[in-house]
Image 1 (cartoon, one colour):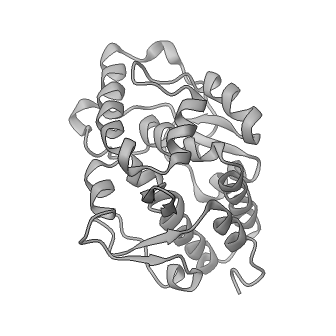
Image 2 (image 1 turned 135 degrees about the vertical axis):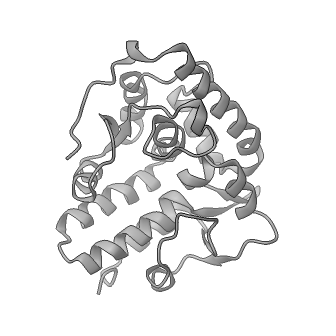
Length: 236
């Protein structure tokens, strides 16, 4: 079971930082026009830059005053039960590992770019941060494998692959989209199927992570996520 560890920042090599910089610059070329304003603002608020892998402690110092969240540095995949515990306490588990140049387009395992660049910026928004904490609290209380699967589908369709309507048009906010060049473009393109967020429809849609999604769920605001996660009928 993955536990909290030290980031060991001094162990990152020049190549590690170069991989981060390449990923950052490539994604930001897309996100300037494809990402929700909350993501772009959040990245600035957290001081996430292209030059080097962020120091998790420094990012936490910026994030905590905004919404009360902090980073928990981990090494490897986090079990669902432990993930729920982290989120319920306003802690996001970020991997200290960074993918190698060989896997620049798709990391075979959890890595710092996906976790920090993708997941942390929306946590600067109070409504999204509230949604994520409530999700964690709900997960801690859930014991049924069937309910755990439904929660997994909800996380996948929102925090990873979610789309949002903004005054500037339809944008992405999910971490998997903000860290994937190909699917980020596809999700907003004419070939993608997009539907309004519906818990019933989300729960009917199995998770698929081997190819682009067959449909993407669109919200009108992060407040809508809070309303959905607080629904008394969520898992009934």
